[in-house]
Image (cartoon, rainbow, N blue to C red):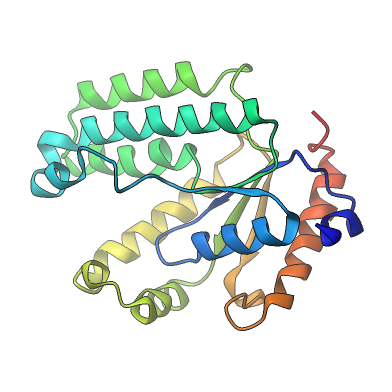
Length: 222
């Protein structure tokens, strides 16, 4: 909390962390929230009623899964702002449509009708002046080789069994997505510029960048 005061950051900012699998979103979310005295908001995976069915049959359940994620993220975003802000959020609502739903459609595991219905619902819910967009989206980026190494170090069985081509495609999709993203201000951070796991002090330069960026964009005064 002292570091927040040092850099004159408000107590009601909403910061969202985005990036591909293995880039360190959860680690950054926890470290930033602890340093700034903010609360955390994490994706609710364990209570998702569609995940098991989805992995068994992508084509049958991809639309259901994406609608569920959209609804849950929308409710969480609403809760954060009703609470008054002061949150760091792991993964954004924008990634669902810009990355995952689009990928299912392009790969043929979501029909065109379902994809158009999903996009129309997303735009009606999110892409309006009434939707509370974050003050800042932090995009964690790195080379494909660096991110692949982190996935290997993490050692999750499902990720180790995933084909290399999938991770490469996901990395490219994220890079294309963030290059065209304009729903809220974006701060890009390279994962090689800090090491929160080895040194807690490496979070301060990140906070310094956030403070400078927010002051420059003047987004933190709502």
